[in-house]
Length: 94
Image (cartoon, rainbow, N blue to C red; front, side, top):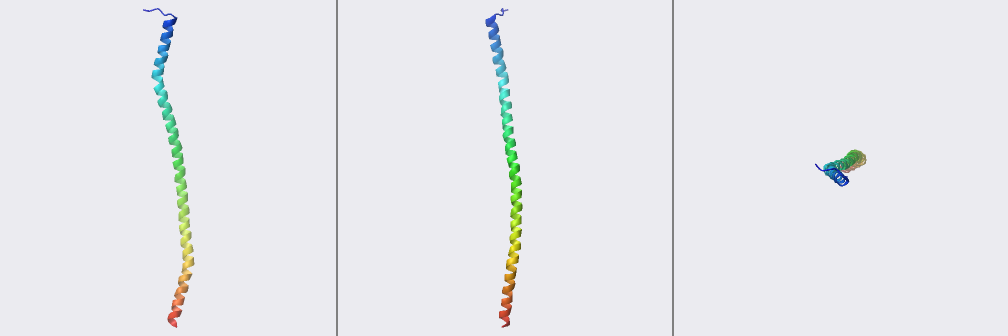
């Protein structure tokens, strides 16, 4: 058995430090990588949810505009059609 002197002790400490680094650095790297990836996923998911809500809002606005357009068309063109029909009837009666 070898004696422990300052050189041997220092060598053992460095060896254990390097061994601990080899064992724990991959775990730390993967844990950080998973953390930042999940953070990005959560940010993208929040953006996705907000875009879905905006899409619902815009769809509702489009539906309202279509309905309003139909109402305005019926109010504008119905009297014009009735006037044309009245003119046609008067023309036939003469």
